[in-house]
Length: 124
Image (cartoon, rainbow, N blue to C red; front, side, top):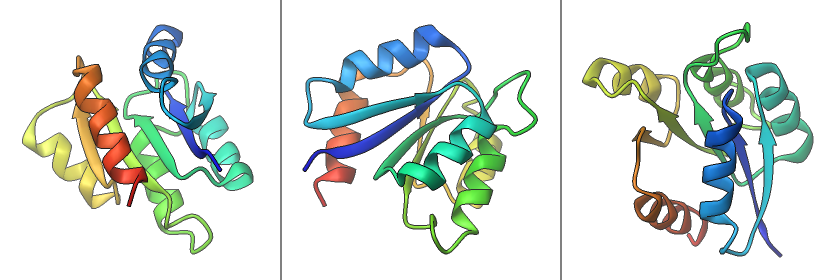
C-alpha cells in the first residue's frame, strides 16, 4: 500500500515541484494550498507525511499553526511533519520544532535531499 504524502504550500509552482520530485516513489500525493485546507485534509485523509510550508499569506492559519493543531490532537499527532520554508534562521527552526515538526527543509532545497529524507521517514 502506498504511503500518503500531503504537500502544503500557497505557491502552485512549489507544490508541483515537490510533487514531481516525489512521484517517482511509491507515494500517493495530495496537495493543499492553505492552512485551513491542510488541516481539514490531514484530519480526513490521515497522511503518513506532511510537507508543510511555514508562510502562507492569505491564510488565517500558517504552517506553524497547522503543525501545532495536528500535534496537539491525539488523532493526528503521529503524522510526520517536515516544514518547508524560506525562513532558515536558527530561531525559525526552533519555532518549527517547538510546534512539533519532525524535520525542517529550507528553500531552495535539493530535490535529492528531500527525496532521501522522505524515504528515510516513510521506510521506517
